[in-house]
Length: 66
Image 1 (cartoon, rainbow, N blue to C red):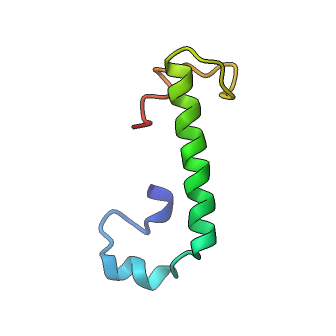
Image 2 (image 1 turned 60 degrees about the vertical axis):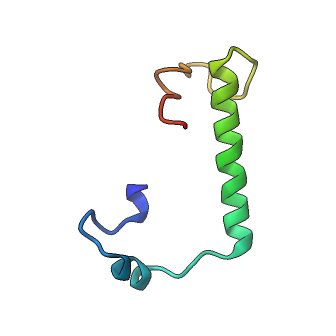
C-alpha cells in the first residue's frame, strides 16, 4: 500500500492530484491477481497443493493475507 501513497501525511486531495483513476479493465485485472494470490496462500495454509514458491511458509509468509 505504501507504494501508492505519496506520504503518510498526505491528504485525499493530495492523492487525487497525484494520479488519475485506473480504468475498469485495469482494476478487474488487479482484482484477479489479488484473488489468485489470496487463494494460493489460503490453499497452502490448509495443506493443499498450490503455486506458492517452494520456500514459502504458509504462516510466516502468508500471515498478511486476510
